[in-house]
Image 1 (cartoon, rainbow over the protein chains, first blue to last red):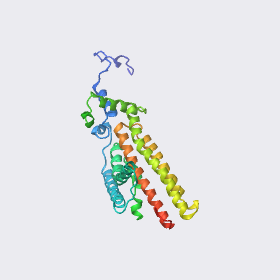
Image 2: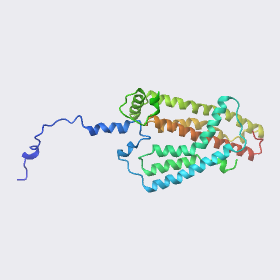
Image 3: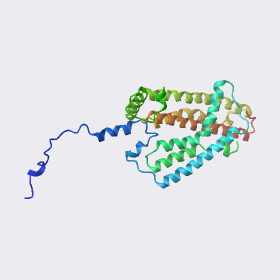
Length: 144
Length: 141
């Protein structure tokens, strides 16, 4: 009474067709290997948890700090005399360095925001903290 | 030519630009480097290399100024000088490793952010050196 060997596979009247052309599996690789993982919203469907309000507060605070960094770098590098090197290439690279240093905080913020999408919140916060530690405008703070 | 301006619409790769990007993304996902990734790394590597060249020549200049100002090699802030030379190498290596398994756009973004961080840190080192020069009452540049 307890063991019935019969009804294990008596039901499938449909012949077992190997499901090769399943459309759900075809949608998977485009999410992983698509070129739009940076900008597109496709990574939301990849099981990424929605961002909690706390992480928005963290991004707001770090964004404000990076904005202050940009202002500090701009004041230091744009106000007052600057020694411009000789040569066209050296001048271009010097101005590029100045521009990138001013933009370094906002660029870091944007990079972390876009590239840690879908990671755990602590990872995102740690990347922001690393930028806050590295990119502080010390020449402005120390008044060089 | 106009196809490269719209990378946000990924239909089936029907033009060569998107096909190249998709191929590169596939090889990146396996931890290999496609030719597009290598090109991007080399292109940004030029900027990092120029920064390294500048850092080395600056190291000679600043140590000369310190030694002439005090007639002693002890006054040179060797830690700052050495860190200034190592920074371009270290940051390029880190940017390369962080972007290893990502697609080309993410790689480029990481290299740009690394270059910006390198600029800020280099200028920070210059500021500290100027501060030490002023504190030692060495004639500034």
